[in-house]
Image 1 (cartoon, rainbow, N blue to C red):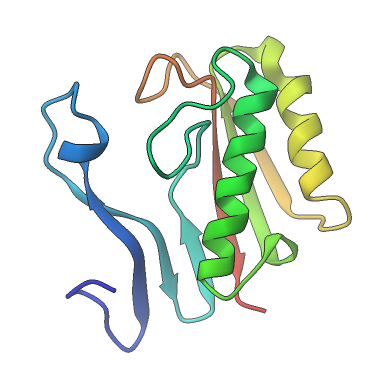
Image 2 (image 1 turned 90 degrees about the vertical axis):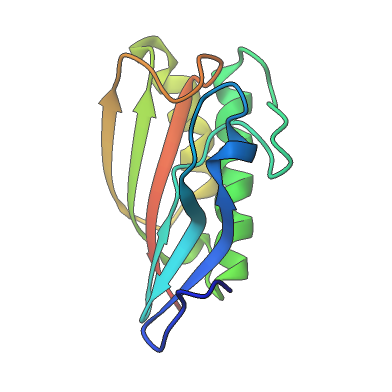
Amino acid sequence: MSDLDGPTHNRVRPFNTKETYPNQSLDNDLCQAVVAGDTIYLRGQVGTDFDGNLVGGGDPAAQAEQAMINVAQLLDECESSLRDIVKITIYLVDPRHREAVYQVVGRHLKGVFPVSTGVVVAGLAQPEWLMEIDVIAVRS
């Protein structure tokens, strides 16, 4: 918990971008998730584990797998699960990665039926990131 937690929200896994992005001149206080009432907002998840290690290198499916592992872990820490996802946004740096990434996400969300948006972007915060998954969920 952070000093900013209150009766209506809880910040999960706070961090500062100085440690997360040592190759950039940033100093922003962020967190991996915010629980506001029964709604959970996750930070966009990429193909790195929570120790900052890139998983899967240049393989978009492997990066998506790690991102979904992160999503599941964060939701669990927020007393929720993948079943409770209501909105997912997937950012891709290359539209040719869509099928590989969506197959991984679809396997994790089989039977969940969230609303979904897919976006192709020029790039993400780090050049090795091929995709990012943004999630909103509710507490079950």
